[in-house]
Image 1 (cartoon, helix red, strand yellow):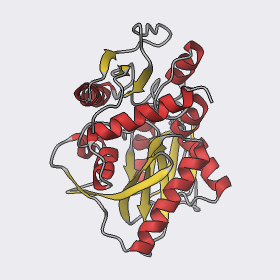
Image 2 (cartoon, rainbow, N blue to C red):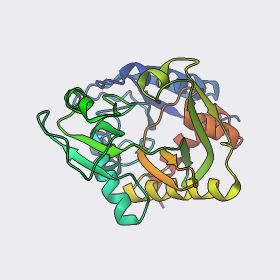
Image 3 (cartoon, helix red, strand yellow):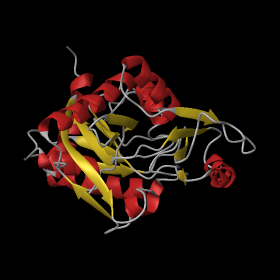
Amino acid sequence: MSAVRPLTITVFLGGPSAEREVSLRSGAAVAKALRGLGHVVHELDPVPGLLRIPEGTQVVFLALHGTYGEDGGVQEELDRLGVPYTGTAAEGSRIAFDKVLTKRRCLEAGVPTARFVVFESAGTPWPGADWAPPVVLKPVRQGSSVGLQFVDDEGQFPAALAESLRHDREVLMEERIVGRETTVGILAGEPLPVVEVRPRSGAYDYTNKYTAGRTDYLCPAPFDAAVTARIQEAALGAYRAVGARDYARVDVMVRANGDPVVLEVNTLPGMTETSLLPKAAAAAGWSFAALCDRMVRLALERSQPR
């Protein structure tokens, strides 16, 4: 696909979060793809509160991950500057980045999600007889499996909670869903083919996610049509519930009986050519460059006078 009209685009990459290195890879891949289409592309490693947008920028492509990128912070700054940007607006980003707010929105919308409880102190005891391992602990406001802890017996809980709390002031504990792990890309409000995630050993943690050869990805995932439709419906429901726009990636566990359970919504998913949203888009016929260009065009469409 070639660009109809060359644009001046600034790609935000890097940033201050724990996922800086992932963001740098995403941003470099996006910048290369957009240049290949003939666009003029600047790359900017943004400093919160000190944005200096290159002159002539028509749109900002957000290739940031984690805090400042996905939590609505950079979106608020760009809104104040009146600069169009890719992806979800500030409020939807804030909600989606907060795992507890996401779950509450899902519950209100009737979207299936795992049972959960929230902790704020490392000295908190096990929550009682209503809960039994295995469970998963996650910092409420982090991404890319940062601070993720798996607890298989109550004795592991104190250390796991303390470790997870190192990454945020609140930690979400949810039941660990036994089943198949999937993710669903959303583009322009439509679900893409389902990707199944199969770690070769252990859980899909930070190491298995970002180490080549540690995880297999099947796309389209080998589910029958009815189960595939249910997974996509749940993902789209979560996308709408948090107020996402343009694109996102929704992580969904699938129980043995085919019931989907939404885990979280990623409003700025990884954007290397081997990341999961581009994999799903490729299965739907989108090249990586065409996907990046589509994301830019969606942002520009909102900024055009009607």
